Amino acid sequence: MLQSTLLKIKENTSVKNLNYNKKEKILDLLSILKLNQILYPGTVIRHTGLTMGNVYSILDEIESINILERVFEIYCPNCQRSTGEIYKSLNDIPEDFFCENCEHEHESPEGILVVYMVNQE
Image 1 (tube, rainbow, N blue to C red):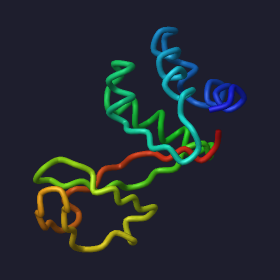
Image 2 (image 1 turned 90 degrees about the vertical axis):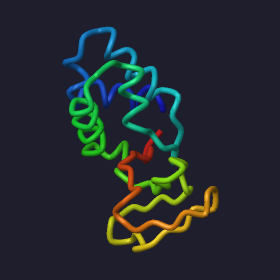
Image 3 (image 1 turned 30 degrees about the vertical axis):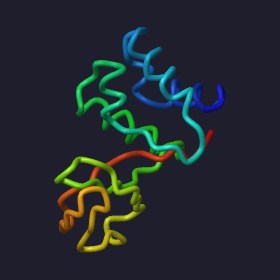
Image 4 (image 1 turned 45 degrees about the vertical axis):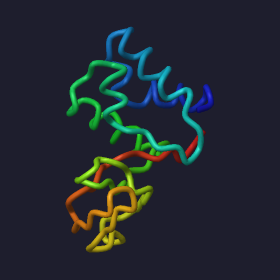
């Protein structure tokens, strides 16, 4: 992400209220992201030590200033691998999935992850 985008995040979200180390960790993580890349909340949790609730709140705030977009990734509940399918709306998600990795069939909403796609560098 561009420095101007990171500054916008730093000034317009609750990131500004984090302690220095957590703030720097989250901004460092965001700085390496490019347009249309996927950001996993679990990655933010691992890098910052923040709680899941705090991470989702921060990512939702970043989404509200149009830097990230919440999307839905499909993974196989059997082998735990991504199917590579990303959907912008829950309404777009088909009812059934077939995993090419392990040949497991499953139904929605099983296997749906909330992730964030970068909208702005």
